[in-house]
Image 1 (tube, rainbow, N blue to C red):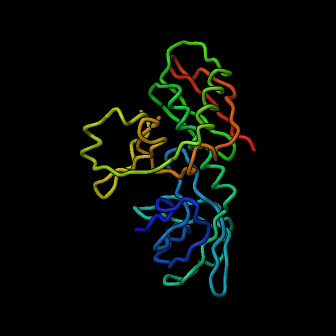
Image 2 (cartoon, rainbow, N blue to C red):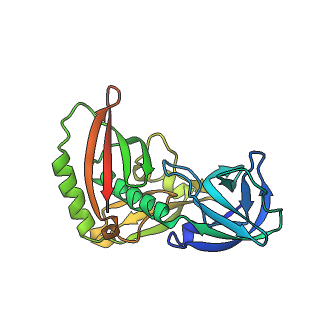
Length: 238
């Protein structure tokens, strides 16, 4: 197992770690990971790993048998098991993912329909909705999202038991991705608080602290992907 440091502090950029294993594909498993592993449409983090006598670029991060594996970008000598290492995150890429991921949560608020899929990349993301034939007013969606960003709503987390989630199925918006479960509890991401709360849903990804950090966004192209599936692209700009 690897302790996911990003769940406690998505803004942490460096951390120590100890190598506890290697995967057969050449990944490096640490006792605690600063790097987010690919899941839920969010790509794995990249960055740099260094130790006494060596270093490696990390191209991506994946899940491997309950652990988190850092995948080197090129062939090289792996740090031996037991080695103390320093993790350095590609922060600009991570923060871009955080902005887009939080913006997609807002998109699921202004389009209150079941989500059938999605993906995240730096500067752009998309959600697929179970949506019957309908005109999508991109300007109106952009205006509504911009207003939510301008409110600078806090983005926080809370945890509930799996039984509590099972008793509140309306919290789950995604049809194709199961909520992240583990150790008998589920992480929820809340946007806003009290009477100003606009969203609460299960999520294991990384997010900005407030909606104001998303910055400028706009709705891009929309596509029909099947009889009732509509894809909406969202761009987050500097």
